Image 1: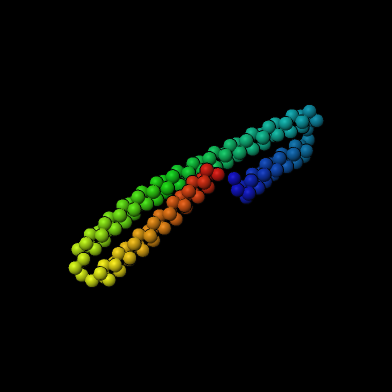
Image 2: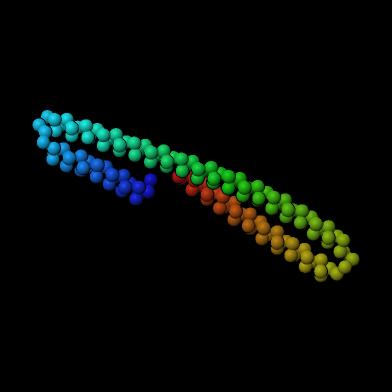
Length: 146
């Protein structure tokens, strides 16, 4: 629960209690009636505080569940994307190897350049996949800490 929400709830409780006390002391009643009214007001304030607390806890739990569900969905999407990216990179590498075989009659320099570019691209993609997996691990740790 945020600090402002706690302050608001505390303000409501203090304000309600102060209002009840002032009202009771301003009313022309006997001591026993005044004490009984004061006890009733205290019980009512306690009940309202319990209601506010229950609602705040319920909303906090609901929010935590939603965040957890959305994080899980995001993790699954990232994993799927990572698998797809690896598959595409493997296919690209195989295509480059096939192209290299086809280009044997051509300049060895061009073929080596193409292979180097494909390898550089593959390393870049693998680095990206590692970064995505690391972020996923961090997100899982953060969601477990919540």
